[in-house]
Length: 84
Image (cartoon, rainbow, N blue to C red; front, side):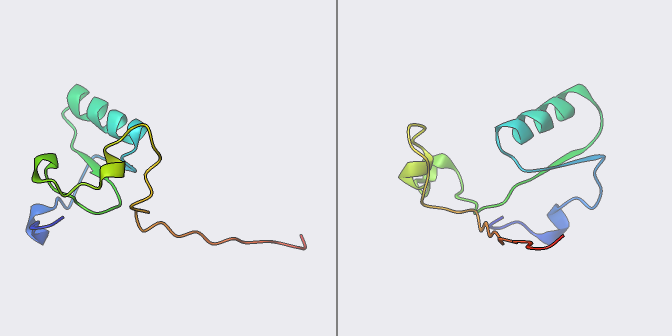
């Protein structure tokens, strides 16, 4: 969100989609195209800017590999329950 000011963000949306993976982005596009409702698509990870600016890591632009350059700030906690 480089350069994005707080007032640029909407405070209300009819539909909020969390996760812009292939399904999330497609669903947001369908909602936006087929209705008059407002749609917000929330996605984690850095803003690399325009592709032409050259700031994108090479592994994110190569569909033949699984990207390893960014973990999208993902954290996981393993919970083991030994007694029910």
